[in-house]
Length: 195
Picture (cartoon, rainbow, N blue to C red):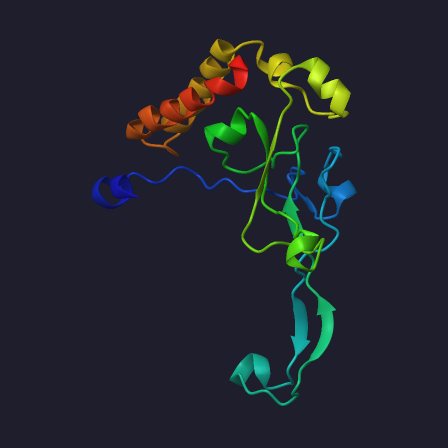
């Protein structure tokens, strides 16, 4: 933004999921591409805004002549499609999602202990870690590759993480000053590979 204002350098292009490249999909489990994970329940509900009829004067004069309004239909809801790790595709992913150690969801479900079990928990995502190795993954029935299967070692993970960060810097989605913070975060993940 600073370079755009002070130097007239256009920002990098927006990155968002699209229907045309199949990175924007229906929200239901099968349509989204979600791979079932043991002990994880995919949402069966989503907020679907209603298309309301408030009367003929609503669109032009903002005067309601039908109160309460009638529901004409529901707006279709689409979400980012899911990749093999159950992470969203077609988005501008930060290095932690581009080179993941877990599935990161934009949703979480309410637990029975807080009431309304299975409903969406407002403004709460989820972190579902990958197994450490193939044996652990297979014993739990997790379809996602383990850390060991996907990276072989922390050094290999670190190299991919740094490359993903540098790519975002080169593309101008991150600033060069963000690199040390990203690498510090990467260093904190070392513990996942050494246990």
